[in-house]
Length: 508
Image 1 (cartoon, helix red, strand yellow):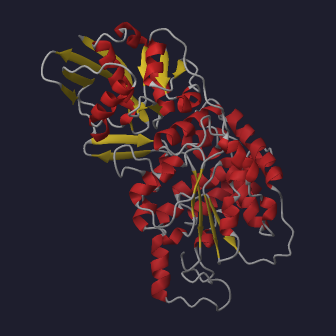
Image 2 (image 1 turned 90 degrees about the horizontal axis):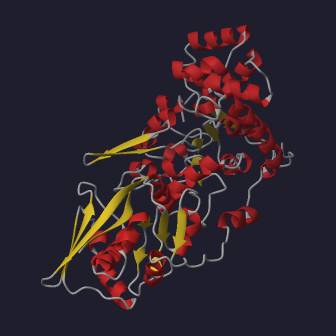
Image 3 (image 1 turned 90 degrees about the vertical axis):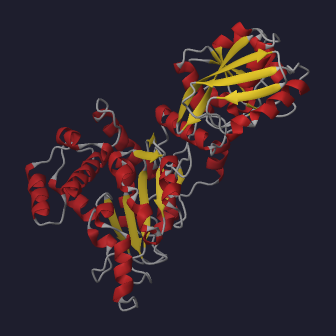
């Protein structure tokens, strides 16, 4: 008898539909799985057999053939276990085959028949709704995550016996107690800008960066507060909107880094070590591997000690910083990821870190040249704010608090969201050239200032666009309708290449 069950396999950030077809015929006992099954799927034979027997059900001692269709899509992960088990039960007459036609099944099976959670539940739930199925059966620990997709019914099941009961028209199992991990962590530890003493220019630049989602580079000697400031950037960012939260939650669910069972509330903050590889930064080390840049989607990617990162790794960020996408081709397959993140970076002005502080810098010309080559012009051209930090007395009072700064940021973002509502973006940093012409109108004085800066060679064409976006954000912070000359002048000052160079003109 032939039976079919519906499930999905994770491919990058997407869920691909899979139909599990099981045929049982007389013959020597065997269990074959065909259809480009990965190692975890092939090993499901032992898990499924043991789970069925230990659940008090009958595992057929006949010739079992399971086909995973379509046959040209690779199947990976243990999430197909439950669909395989239910298709075998339906093919052997222990379960109504018709009941399988309206349900998606996604869970790993333990040997005693209990359901284990799998990565990518939110993507699976959305794919279930897109496929027109009515319900998704899965482990209770991932039921709240799946319930974020409101178009389907979520049926949590503790064991394989519970799944049989649900498919036979019975009730689902109860959900476990909900604990909001992110809310707890947020209450325990939230760095605040009031901890920063002095550094008014850097704090103002951080607020501007947060208001328009602009990339920012902080440069200064060790101990000037670069890392401290960057770690306080999330505290002044607005909370994720529901659509942004679903995007971020889906990515972290696929990657297996999701904390808690509901929507992410805080924007991601990723701070990889400078030893990270290109694959670790943008993904692609293996099938479905998600890099740090993708995990920072809708949040912040912080690169501390920027000049210590591999040159190749930094250059790999040029396309995502410009286009907001990463296309990785491996073995004839292409995976496209949507890394819309703010880049925050910190660097020393020279290898010893003392450039600009009198005669304390002891770096040789060769060391300075190597340091300069680490940060290419095209990469720096994609950073909107370049800010230099000097040593300041610790007795200076804080410039502002995170609460006050967040109010400024949220007001500016609300203005941007209303203005850009019909363009498919929500922040100034994502405006393309056509949007700039419509929404960043320059006054006559501002236009002359921009033309002068471009004609002098101080700005590239891309740099001019980034200065204009930055000036638009400065105008939004002041609730100005048009971009005035003073906004453009401040944007030019905040984008000065002094932050990427020592006081003696050596690049960092």
